Amino acid sequence: MLTLDRIIDAALREDIHTGDITTQALSLGKRSAIARLVAKEDFVLAGICVAERVFHYLNPGTTFTACSTDGSRVTKGSVIATVQGDAADLLMGERVALNLLQRLSGIATVTACFVETVRGTKARIVDTRKTTPGLRELEKYAVRVGGGRNHRTGLYDGVLIKENHIAAAGGIAEAVSRTRAYIPHTLKIEVETETLAQVEEALASGADVIMLDNMSLAEMRTAVALVSGRVPLEASGGVNLETVRAIAETGVDIISVGALTHSPRAMDISMLLE
Image 1 (cartoon, one colour):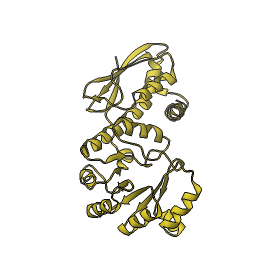
Image 2 (cartoon, rainbow, N blue to C red; image 1 turned 180 degrees about the vertical axis):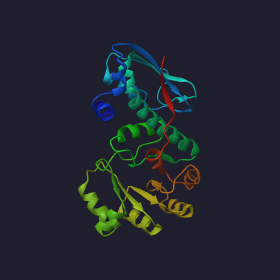
Image 3 (cartoon, helix red, strand yellow; image 1 turned 90 degrees about the vertical axis):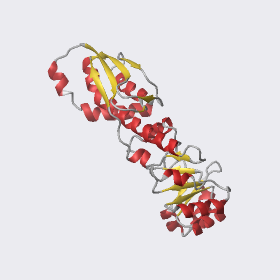
Image 4 (cartoon, rainbow, N blue to C red; image 1 turned 30 degrees about the horizontal axis):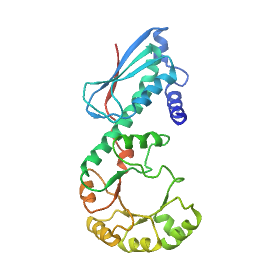
């Protein structure tokens, strides 16, 4: 809740700043109003509690009644929620509430599409750190709502030795050795590889997870056979809805998809005052 309130506070300050000039000009006083949040297309809902918190943050006396829950599939024209309270508060909170709700629902919807596309394989769809600055926790929550899994949250909670780390350390074996000596036993080490030779080196070095970065389908299949289940394999790079099924069918365990959070389309939602 503290993280959510920081996000909402920053968004409201950005939007309202010194005051909502248009609403102030209308001299609405303490007029009460009822508004409906309406879906203008079909999508997977995520962030209904975030939208509710926006209005409560402005005025704790506002009544927010959700008609759908996160994870549910809403249809065009359906009422997602009703909001009742001071008209000025509803108008001031409208854009921030919709921006967050539309963004999170977009992430949940595209994630659900990826998850459905690989259904029947063992591959799990996971996100990346390619998130909107300041919104990572909310966006990763939306991925979970859509049926996906979270990769590491940040640089602090998971080890991923990438190509630049390997270059700086002087090789995969040295990078893994130094990292293993530094981290607690509770953390796993993932190593990014770009060639099958690097896969072999990462495996020999004791990597706990191996990422196959931008490899061809043939290379992925060879890597799966080479590793033979000894450690999980993660496919990354060039993943979209057209390619993800074929990638999953190579036998990899994890598919990371940056597009879940870096380029989803916001869902179309309106707030209408009665």
